[in-house]
Amino acid sequence: MSIAHGIRTLGVLGAGQMGTGIALVSALRAKVPVLLYDQSQDQVKKGLAFAEKLLEKDVSKGRIKSEEAKEARERITPVDPSLGLKGFRDANMVIEAVSENLSLKQTIFSTLAAELSPDAILASNTSSISITKIAASAIPKGASAASEEGKASAGRVVGLHFFNPVPVMKLVELISALQTTKDTLDRARSFAVACGKEVTTSNDVPGFVSNALLMPFINEAIMCLEKGTATRDDIDTTLKLGMNHPMGPLQLADFIGLDTCLAIQKTLYEGTSDSKYRPSILLERMVDAGWYGKKSGKGFYDYQ
Ligand code: CAA
Image (cartoon, rainbow, N blue to C red; front, side, top):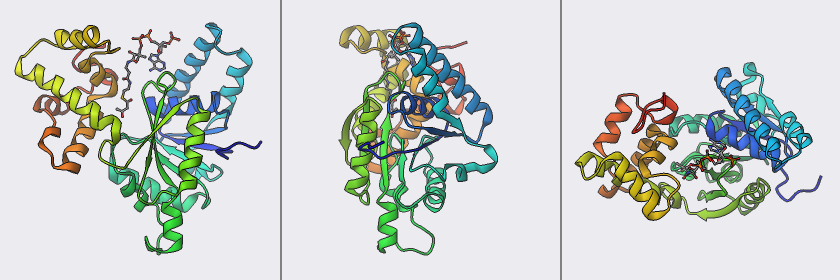
């Protein structure tokens, strides 16, 4: 099959809400075989069950034929857990969607660079961490960043930032590291388009365009609540009905995950040293309490 992105097999690392969504749109829309890996087998099971539910709903609503759902289902294969990242060896693109932790991502990209073929694209779904820093870890041991081998290896790293819920949100933000080659960017863009997404590009700045704008907005809403300016419901209703936002900022923060919001805000604050990005104390305390939003059953709202 001759396709612009040239992706024959995709690896998706992380079977949380983002990884599962990416696996699903890749199998259903881009029609590529997907290897799905998560260190938690329970998470893989949950992810596959959720993807199955979404496929069934698409069929029942007449959006896809049952044959298309069957084909998409069959394209997603869980990686044998004993193989770990070695299970991605046959993939010529991997999208990493693990939690927002730079050192974890650096370890992963260093391993992927060693395990995968030199022309495989290594993409991160990070929502704020520097792609340039991640790319710098994807250099084979013994090679320098300035060597041809080092430049080629780091040059295949790119940011491919999907939005939650992935099957519904139409955007992918494409982020170029300093090292990313034009060929990598072109192939990653073509792949996102094949997944049915519109693509915008952003330079590698903390939070990129999306979260450099969204997170201060969410943080201001949390500060309004902290200061007692208005109640939770009045803050959210103001934005929902006054500005036609599908969710108010506090509900959206719960939906994204308060731990994720805090991690992104810290990246913005530390990466810019600009006080306007300082996370609110209330957000810090809620994360301290283990109130991570929808996924943990409690955030600004209760989800029991
Ligand atoms: N996965 C897949 N599909 C989902 C879903 C999920 N987690 N949640 C909702 N949907 C689907 C529903 O199944 C429904 O589909 P149908 O039309 O087939 O029934 C559709 O979305 C609409 O859902 P609902 O009718 O239940 O509810 P809604 O109209 O309130 O829409 C919403 C839900 C789409 C999530 C909407 O509230 C929304 O757009 N919210 C804002 C989401 C947003 O801003 N996302 C970006 C977050 S930022 C991010 O992801 C990146 C980052 O870096 C932090």
